Image (cartoon, rainbow, N blue to C red; front, top):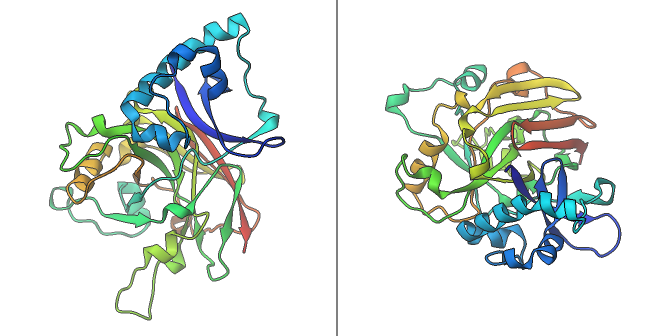
Length: 312
């Protein structure tokens, strides 16, 4: 049964973030579910929300699955109610420990950016790090820095690590995934480059501003998506489709990225891998984001996130 784990807060009443389980088209407060089925509470220690659950993901995933399977019967009995969308707002599902990004990881995107790639058999993934403080939730604003004129979008499949791993093989890589989320790797293209140093690129400055990492709307467990490389990825700006492709276009697939990164360092539960973006970004089109623009990033079987651009 498809389900996802979300973090939300009430628009009125007691402040603070809470955890919910999305099943079908509705969301259910996790603590309300556990009150209705206390026998399913084992393994779901959520003092710090989803971040805690990810730290012990194998136990947590089994608990979330059982709760999701219990929802239809609880609804029939009238023991639970779905949350009213008018009364809550979604938060960032959790704050990643680290964010690893894959650069030029789609053939068509590399072509639109004018990137000359070595033959695949002679190369490896090109990865960078993006500040975890860049993440922001759906239905929040992306703040456009004053010193950029080339703010750009990049819809990406976010892969969340669920178990520590080092030197993982491609064949075993999926066993270390907790689940998937939608990620929008906002980039200030003109801040990615520098002329005042001999080092021509500065992706930290171009990609790590606060709000440059819209993420959500929730975390979908790995076992709910059987073929993540086949997922369709889309991004619209003001209702116009800009990106529309599948994750099959990756140069280095999900498993290969995990194997590569784990060969450099120990991946930890909660680390997020933004696995690259398909063709259709603003730089390739010569069109950039401006104040008031609305972006909607969607990935099949996961969901959509919506964000607005505001000038600093």
